[in-house]
Image (tube, rainbow, N blue to C red):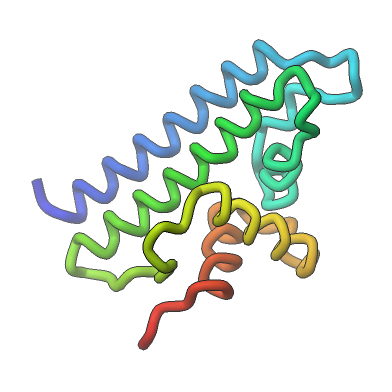
Amino acid sequence: MKYSGWIRNVGIAVLGAGWLISGNAHAQANESDGYSPEDFEVHTARDLSDVCTIDPGHSDHNLAIGFCYGFFEGASHYDDALAGSGLHNDIVCAPAGVTRKQATAVFIQYIKDNPQYDIEPPIDAIFRSLIAKWPCAE
């Protein structure tokens, strides 16, 4: 398979996983505490930040954090796929050993510090925040 076809397939798989997870979250969320299933419909960076910062005592905390980390894992694999194609360079150059938790914390702080980006698509904001923290040498 050509690299461009492989990258397209990876993108489709990441998006499909996100839809499946959000559908599962929609079915499981508890609406009685002010938290709604729509919180897992991440259309903006703010939506993703809200999911990633759900209160640890909330009954859906583990589901939300799993969704959040999965989103970041997908972004990381997308960056790796692009760089591995030979057609693009790495987008983010984080030091070895950076965890999803650390990358998520960078994103959350970036959105707090730069609210003008909280309405953009979540994947754009993820890369914007991580590039700001760990840019690649040109």
